[in-house]
Length: 406
Image 1 (cartoon, helix red, strand yellow):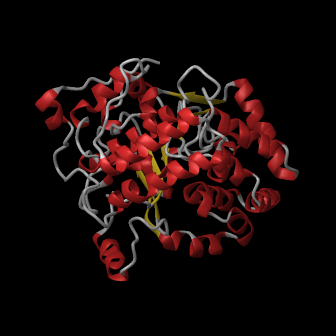
Image 2 (cartoon, helix red, strand yellow):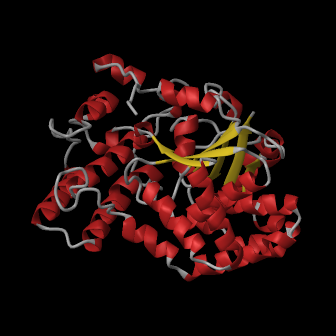
């Protein structure tokens, strides 16, 4: 697909890149969450990627140069010969030559991952072309004992009432690798409520299910987040939606290339489907149904360059806007999609979710574990209780939300 997002240039672009209403999150405040990502997480990731593959001298030199740039230098543009040079110039030419810490956090993170792929030769003709530098981390999760236990726990699904099953699967998809799918399924409704609902800072799940009554003939869009152990409960939820008539078709939107370490691509979807089909019992049956659904077109994996863009969904290109407008519901998974949905800015937490998503072309839901500073749609009482707790509730991943704008 062709990227159609228009952007201004020069001083006009700088103004356009700063949405009104709340400060854009930067990374230039030492000790802040955004600062720690650039100062600590990114350098550590470069070393982890270096250690994960037997890269040659060229890749090692490029990784060293990138590490030096992000720690001591300024943002450098892509090489003119790079296939997406013009696209990234359009997306943020005004940040080139500036400190990484002075660019918007969302932009700096996204551009870092693009530069990391360039350093290891992902886009270049050669032996490392198309080799996902994050694949070992994703695959390790799928081989873990926790996944095996969760797949076995699926055998009890058939004995659970449909409403409780739907709640358990929704929460498993919400919490991702923090979920204990086995506990959610086998413990029953009250335990699910105690373990999961108590940690929800907002819960519009009733509205979500009202939008998806059984017998619905429409299409649900699921904009995926992470691969590995987090993608499996997403796929199990998708199977439930199809099998119980909440949708006639599900489109799973995934990334076109490796992004944010664990984000799902086509290969990751296939790996998870194979993991399911190679299991036993209900997991195997779910995997078989999903495999057939993809072959029949009732489950479709789709991607778009915009899913790796450093832009909010408010700037989505027209072809995506038209597609989402036709869907019964768009479910956006994960923290990054949430930041892009509401804007990566320091909104007051009580700003209504519906206000920040009014631009979205159709009904939209966010399922997100809190792992960054952005948050909207909280009740005042909830906010006060969270602030009194003294915990790092915005970034620790210990809280989550289900927010829906019909």
